[in-house]
Image (cartoon, rainbow, N blue to C red; front, top):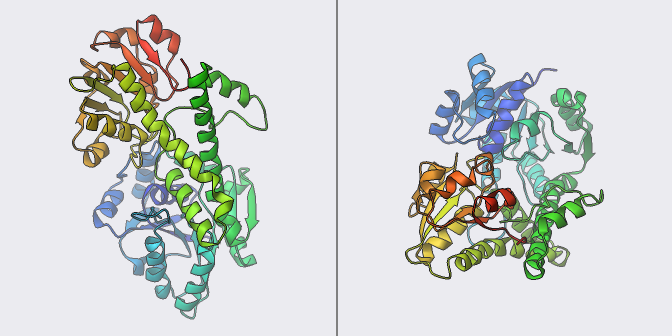
Length: 438
């Protein structure tokens, strides 16, 4: 059967999913309540940076296979399978997830459906959400049967297109053979290409995503805790991670000590997971995640402390260059960015801070307007007393330290990502400081 697809929500997840479903051969309608965003997408422009996405989206908009609307009525008439891709941000002043966008999408779509349909949740939600929504769908649905499935996303910003078209697994949380059948048919090209499928209940599907994110956050915070020990003992955390990574039970991925994680997923998902465990009476099971979160947040202050040490605890009259604003390379996403958090803290101490990022400058200016933003690395580093490498863009990793040394006031570099070539920088006359390595 040839299904027509709608995608509810056109942020990082939704816009990517819509373009990729069109690439798989489906007619796709994206839905968003922001007219300006819809107009931009219909013109073939993505309102954020994600490698490979805009050319793919433009290709299918121009072919007529993909279009966007603000109308839930149009979505209900158009679609057979409706993917729920709206955001679940952290509630203001709380750890718990804000479910208002998810609930609103269900309330807006379901009463309008006039034929059998499958709604597929992809948003990251607290465990128990799918069961609650299934009950609400049953109340709202007209005579036509409407079912719910939950198939969490596992995309990484910067690799979202690759992860959507060639995922390392598909998880189908279903309550019926019909829902599983539809999902297997929709994702047939992906399954045929070798992606494994795990079929499970709603709760397991919900826990897979938050469980994976919490595990990865734990691994990152673990190696950063080791970095704290390395700082006190003189050990090298990078060599430690290499040695640990040779153990197949541990692996090397996500064992990169540095500034810690940020972005729109790991921090808020970790905290929402803890909040949900408390609501379910299982708070003690996730108590360790509080320390995982605390270790991660300490890394930001650690960079500020190292900077103060390099500057002799004199902030006034000092110029600090910050290389990086996005929370990680290959994205313009600054949500919970460790780099901007550090830049803001140093600015509050009274130093003159100059920031440069290859893609995230506009977003950073809107959120942190009091910082100075440079047009290039050289501009940011002009007259700097210390250079902070805080986002691991390839452009920064390939800098010629001998050339850069001619621009700065004093050749001090703090490698907040531990990925600059330390011997090369030191040979060029720089005083190099890493995190967890001397």
